[in-house]
Amino acid sequence: MASSSWRFQAAVGPVNLNMTTRFDIRVRRTRQLDTATRVTIVELCTEAFGKDFSRLFLYLPTDGLHLIAYRDDQIVSHAVVTTRWVQPDRLPILRTAYVDAVATLPAYQRRGYGSAVMRKLAAHIAEYDLACLETYRPAFYEQLGWQRWRGPRAGRAPDGQLIPTPDQQNIMILRLSNTPPLDLDRLLTIEAQAGRIW
Image (tube, rainbow, N blue to C red; front, side):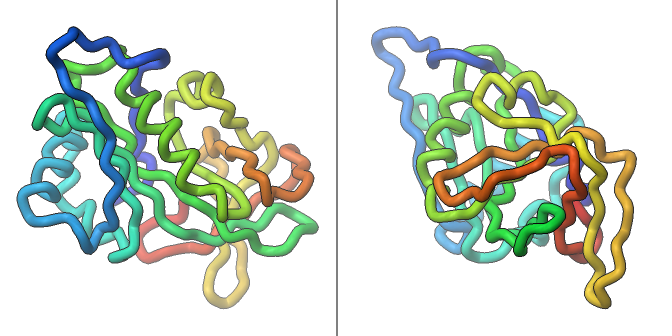
């Protein structure tokens, strides 16, 4: 599955709930998710994007970190973090929190669920050097402190060759406490994975 199909805009602002609605965000590793929860996440992402996400969990390591938003007992929003290795030009390879499958059920979009998930996610990745994602809706992430990488982007093949990715314009990064000074106009590379780069 192309990584670009794993992105989704959610609402900005506080979660809008009535007095009787319970809302919480649960943090789980991929290996902790039972079959029913995995199926629900796949269905959520498929409905949100209008694309088939049935292979989502084939791409995720067992230690993937899922942020799962529940409205009462219903899963309404989701994001997952995996470890990848991004290298800005002239800097070492950085241990990177790569964010995927950011999705909110259409019936609950623009109510703040996605923003709440992303804010809680940011609190769980402080030990990384950098956070990164690809999106087709950069304005949502910019309001949460993410920045668009303006320079060229490429994948790193196992033999060290670079694979240019000029079509992937909306690569975004979030600076963390361990992030070194960055020049957003220089080259940014990431390790190429089977079936995907970004």
